[in-house]
Length: 265
Image (cartoon, rainbow, N blue to C red; front, top):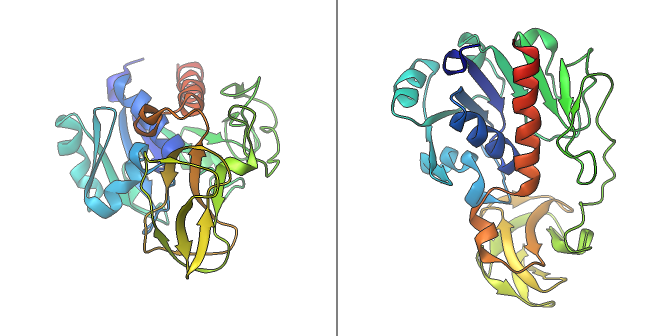
């Protein structure tokens, strides 16, 4: 199989999708990322979707460049970068005729992806059934099965509880207390203590529930809804983790790579 000639379309540019794109890019695949008009990634320093706002985004030495149409892909690939385009209805991407589609939106449900979208379709996490919606699924739940390829059935169901880091689950996640516009007080990479004010939504304060490093936070000035995840505190307290792809994203990316190699031969 000539990997350098394979086009992989990745739906989504958040941190998990970006980990997948980063690994496939380094393996020689031609990656195209499509995104919504206003993505809300929390781990923005390792999310290619930031190119939607800034035109460019770099993750561990790999750069994504926002393009306006599919015809611009080739020049970006030849420059050693990843093209990213706003294509919420996935219309333009299909023109490229990708060999592989990876639905990396992590929506916990299937928002319209089907096995007819590409010769090989891979879904990440719950919401997909291998053999019905997609050809295979990659497990995204932290734990023993993380990153495994599911060829029959589904990934583990969504529990609604974040995976543990240092034994901490829900308390490491910051959520919007009410509907309104989010504004931050501290920045990604800052050390925080339990009770520190991280920011506010429509004037309602958002405080840290644990000590650690603010690993991720959505862009300020964005309208959010009550309960939406807006930030992530890492209790391990290592600032370098803010700028590097997580072990979870790397494991999932490995599962995607396995799926491509197993089913595209």
